[in-house]
Every structure is written in structure tokens, then in C-alpha cells.
Image (cartoon, rainbow, N blue to C red; front, side, top):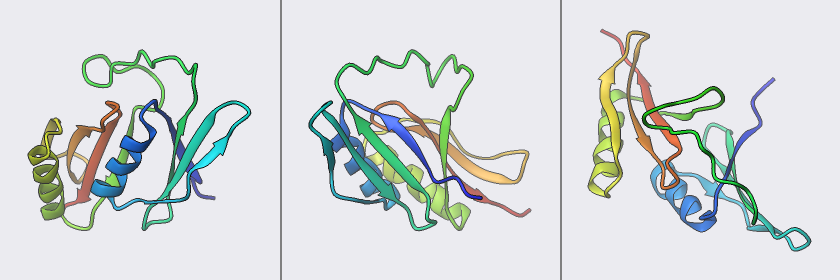
Length: 134
């Protein structure tokens, strides 16, 4: 069994599509629109086969989870894996240069990863990770 996809509600559908396409090499499908309920979405596909659905519809309330200071139960981040720790540094540098916040790292973790944590334009928490060997 595999995880088919994860989904994110947003009110900035095009901005998030462009972010994940530019920084994480996502390939979007054509925009899906359900005119009956004003629902719009994209499925973004990644090289690994994983997919992320970005969804927009009027009336969806703001998420009150603080992804920076006071995380709460439930799904809290997406992790993107790269092949080498140098690529973690490269991605962190690219995001910083383009004005995105790095919450922590890049750093070695106790469980064998080299990673950093950032936020997408909607403040969804993301990790970029690589396995490291001492």
C-alpha cells in the first residue's frame, strides 16, 4: 500500500501551485473546477510518484494551528527528500535568497537526517531532508 496523496486547503491556489512547481519540481495537472460549489483544485505530481492536492473553495475557515510556535495534534508537516545533504543546503539557500523563512537548520538530527524546516506561502510547515552517514 502507498499513500496516494495529501491535500491542502488554500485561498491562494495559483500562488501555492507556482511555489511547489518552482521549488519542489512538482508537475501540476490542469485546473479542475466544480462550478456547482465553486471548488477548484490542482494535483501536483512529484518524481517519487507522490502527489499533493491543492484545493480552494469559498467558506473554508482559517486553520488555527500555529505551525511555528504552538503546534497542535494532527498532520503538521510535509517532508521532501533529496539525494544528498549538499542539496539540503542548496535548497535552504535558494529559499532564503527568495525571501522565505527558515525555521531551523540545516542541521543533523539524532535519527540520521540532515534537514531544515521552512514554511510555504500559506505557512504550512515543510521539511527538506537527506540521509547522512558519519
